[in-house]
Length: 487
Ligand SMILES: Nc1ncnc2c1ncn2[C@@H]1O[C@H](COP(=O)(O)OP(=O)(O)OP(=O)(O)O)[C@@H](O)[C@H]1O
Image 1 (tube, rainbow, N blue to C red):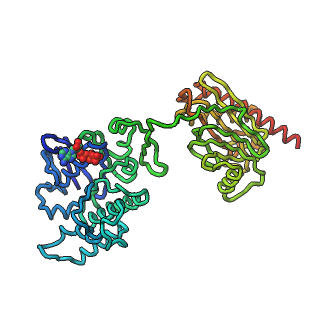
Image 2 (tube, helix red, strand yellow; image 1 turned 90 degrees about the vertical axis):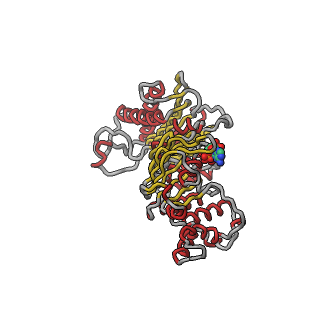
C-alpha cells in the first residue's frame, strides 16, 4: 500500500504541492486529474523521490521512502515519466531491458533468465515484440510510448507511477494499454498511480480519482464522486455536461463548445407531415433531440427524419433492424439520422394535430390499431397478440431530461384514458384495455425557444400533451373502427 501524508513540495521558493494526503490500495488504480500547471507532475516527482519533499511523508508498506536505497526503491517503484530524453538511440529490446537495472548485481552484467523472461513478457504485453530490434528513433510517438510502458513493466515493481501513459496513443492502443495495466494491477496486485488528461478514460479505468487544483486536492473518491459537473467546471474553468457511460457505472463528461454554428431555427408543423399508404413521414430542418422506443434508433439521440412505416399484418422478419434500415436507405434517407417505427395500421389514417400554447407548440401524431388491445393488468393470464399504437409527441421547445420522461408518462395516461373513453376491450379477457402489446412512443423536441423543465399535467406542456394525445388517440381509434366496418 502507498501512503501519502501531508505532502508538500515545489521548486525554488515556491511550494507547488500543498498538504496532500491519500492512500492507494494494492490492486487498484488511482487517477490524478487537474488542469495544466495544477501540480500533477510535481506530485508524481515527489512520490517517486525525484524531487525531495519539503514536508509530509511517503510510505511504501509502512516504510518511509527516505529509508530506501536507490536500487531498492527501483525494485518497489517503476516510473513512466512524461518526457523521455534520449541521449542516444537504443533498440526497443535494449530500452525495455533498462527496466531490469535494479535487478542487476555488481558492475558486470549478471543477466539472468528472470531478467530475460521479464523483458520478453513486457514486450509481449505491450505488443512490441516485432519491433524488438528497431531503433527507438524510428518508431512513431505511440509506439515509443508503449516501449516506455514496457520498460516500466519489466522493472517488475509493485508500484507503478505513470504520467499520461496514453499520450500519443490512438483509441485502440489506449484501450489495449489500459486493459493491460488494469489486468496487471488486479492479477499482480500492483498499486498504480497515473496522471490523465482524459477525464472519461480516467473514470472508466480508475478505482479512485484525485482532482487537483493549484496543488491542492479539490476532491477525491470513486469516479462518481469526482466526475461531477460543478467540480470539473470550476477546476478546468470550462462548461461541460455529465452523462452516464452506456455500459458501466462510470460517469462521463463532454465539452459544451463556446463556439458552434448557430442551428437553423426549426419549427415542427403538423402541415409538414406527409401521410401515405407507405408511411407517416416527418423531416425536420435541424436534428431534434429524441427519446423513443422505435425499431430504428431507439433510446436517446438527435435525428432529422421520422418514419412510421406501414407493414403487412404478416410482417415477421428475423432481423427487422436490417430490413428496416434497407427500407430507409432505399428511400434516400440515412439510417443514422432516422427514427423508424412500424405499424400494420393504415398510415394515411394517422391523426396529426398541432396544439398551440404561450410557450410554443406541440404536434401529436398517432396511429392506433386496437383489434388486439390488451388489459395490461391481466397480461400474465393471456396469450400475446400483436397490435400497435404509435404515439409521437413533438415539441417546439427546450425540454429537460425530466420533461422527456414526464411527457411519456403523461402521454401514456392520456392514451389509456382514450381507450377507456372508446370502450376498447381486451378480446381475450373482456375487460377494458389499457393499450396494445407492442405500443411505441416517441418524444422529440427542437431544444430551441422556451426552457420546459417539466411535462406533467401541472404544466402547460403537460396539459397540451395530455389533451392532445387523448384527442388524437380517440380519433385514431374511431377511424380504425370505421375502416374495419368498411372491410
Ligand atoms: N522544474 C521546475 N522548476 C520550476 N517550476 C516548475 C518546474 N516544473 C514545473 N514547475 C511549475 O510548477 C507548476 C506545476 O507544474 P506541473 O508540471 O506539476 O503541472 P501539471 O499539472 O503536471 O501540468 P501539465 O498538465 O501541463 O503537465 C507550474 O506552474 C510549473 O511552471
